[in-house]
Image (cartoon, rainbow, N blue to C red; front, side):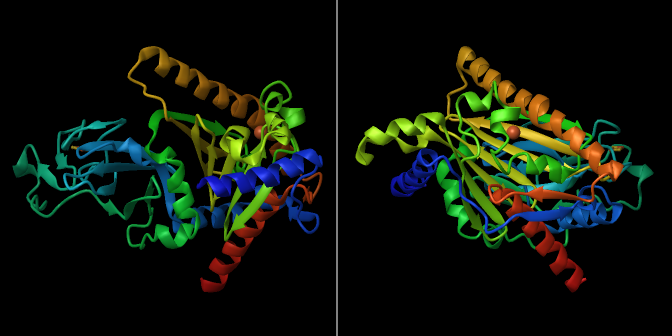
Length: 383
Ligand code: FES
Ligand SMILES: [Fe+2]
């Protein structure tokens, strides 16, 4: 994001902080409690996920030719590689023999030997080795290979389509946000690994926790709220995606500083909700990524939490410090946000109330649910 745009956002955030208010939606909004609990909606949500481009990680997770990483996306194991020409490929991580995962974790390798019976694949997915060849007269070694999925590196991130026959058009999906996401550089910072939360909450309740800061003063009283303002958000929608600016408490110090001297990015957290299930949180020091997936039933979801840092991790103490920051942020989401919303899921499933209310001061939350509803409506008309 260029400096002028940052200053402009800071000006808007400072005005909200000074006036003790927040960007407001036109009116209150109500959603049906069954959106979080019904098997029908769960089924449509899973279909929506399969039909949408999926951001699965940072471009820096495939640092150079020969690098690979594995991802679990809606229960599917996916292998991503960077081939010798620098391009990114993705495959179902499923051996052609008896469906073992061919590889786990991440690293550098030009060939992958299946841990079960050593069928071997190169990093463009081709089957290049089959021990005991006479046992498999029907396998055409020269043309056989892992099932390839559409894949792309775009705006600093790795993307796949879970439908092998789909076209993956990430530029169309992100629209004008693409350039802005790339400009932060977080997709090229050093990745710090993945932390996984398997929780008894609908995936949308998980996404909802990132869509407003109205809850900071209560839920995060002793953590985030010590540095960030509550119920104070700059909101902008970009088609089905949105951006929130959460001002830090220190933003009020800018009142007495001429704009030319502002260091604007030091006073905010920038949150992106990318349709349908991705949350990015950007600060000067951290590029957090939350990939949130529906689980096997409406009341379960998987959150994969990643973080990247602009720091040089070759020094041990720096790396340990970056991990400690990641762990702190992760513990806050796990122990404060998700723990609390487990109780919402239980209440919703009890059937005691048939709806939830989103305030005018929760425009991000409203936008999330309106975007999902519009996409489901379009899918049902098309289908
Ligand atoms: S399952 Fe992979 S070689 Fe047998
Ligand atoms: Fe929170």
